[in-house]
Length: 139
Image (cartoon, rainbow, N blue to C red; front, side):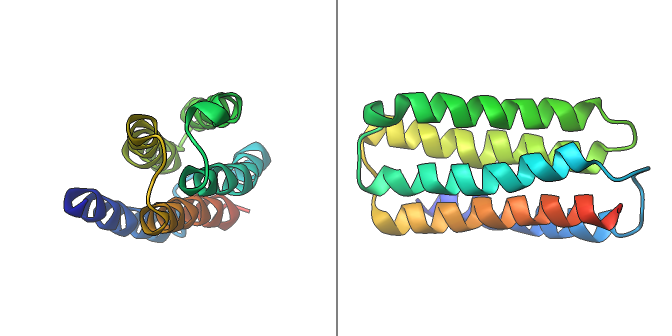
């Protein structure tokens, strides 16, 4: 659990750096689809993660598939845009370093402690907010 928290803290600092870099207008133009992806996933992902403290992983398999597919699609979209390396990296990091390990732990344990869910959800929300902020900085 300590390693999980250290990883989350490190990622948070990385997203803050991304946010600062994005304000330098390193990307070419505003991406409404990218902003929509971040906004939609902020709601659906945090709702899904909240269920980890109250219900089993298997009971949410359809919702998990839907959210992970949307996350993969958002990451792929970000990677396809020119001059979008920082935001694409943030999407990939969110997917591989925060969401995937969380889901793996939920699957392994069946249900998760509410404090762990609360902390993980907060980190994912902050990460998505940083992505939204980076997208809006190009507007």
